[in-house]
Image 1 (cartoon, rainbow, N blue to C red):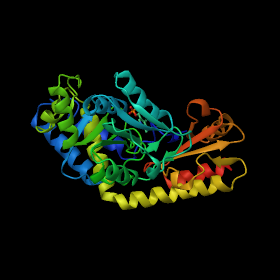
Image 2: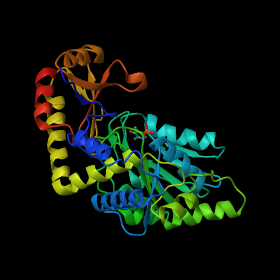
Image 3: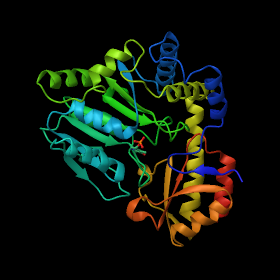
Length: 356
Ligand SMILES: *Cc1c(COP(=O)(O)O)cnc(C)c1O
């Protein structure tokens, strides 16, 4: 039986991926030089499609790296001299904070319990903090922060940089780029692609910050520091031999999403999310983990199960449906269901039927 993945990542592949991989092989994408004109064309096409799909303004640069975790490290290295502030409400936001600690910075943490979000008006950012790090969609707990949080913070703290993790909410999330300096994602979640590529979208303020740190003699990393990435990106290249196949596939999948239309993708995501939450809200055996409705993620749905997660997961697996178990200490009592563009409404109906 062919399995269907409603896991939070790696996730169900986009149905078109097999065809794209075949065309990549037919066109020698995995053998061409990463300094060739053909590679530059792939780089150009993918960055143009990513910009169009996510509606990214022209003053942002697009950098290819290896993962979202790498993005966290690069952003701290290049945008922080001493202190960043982290909104922490689960494992991925905690990871971002921990990376700042590992890099010997002195980060601040504003923490709420798992399952909770942040109210922008209540947030007080330390004057010494240079960068505010936000995990827009906390994949470990299914909490999504209303994207207007960045506008609020930017208006109150215009001198601070703002970085936002959209790994498990892209491409459907709608951002206000005028209040953001840096965004990142990897491609094995909502884009429905094989893992191994991360994308950083950074504006000129981030570049200037990293140059100023470099001029002060501070460590901003080596081949993947922002000035090095930018110098190469200007020539439609990368410092190292990159994941050319991943870059190619991302361009193709964005082209497909553009063809569908981002508003159609958003509507479909909302529709499937309401089906899931309505089911969980009314079923005696399940309860959405996130109680505050405005914080419920449309793309990662987390539920408490009175029967225990293992029984539910096994039952669905017997039907060919793979869903996620709880993250960390919630392993045994939570289930996590992804709602990405590659997860079809018909499969979702079957999952709800079996959950019942
Ligand atoms: C999966 C995930 C990451 C890590 O992504 P990698 O590509 O594995 O490094 C970071 N942040 C969030 C919110 C995620 O869901």
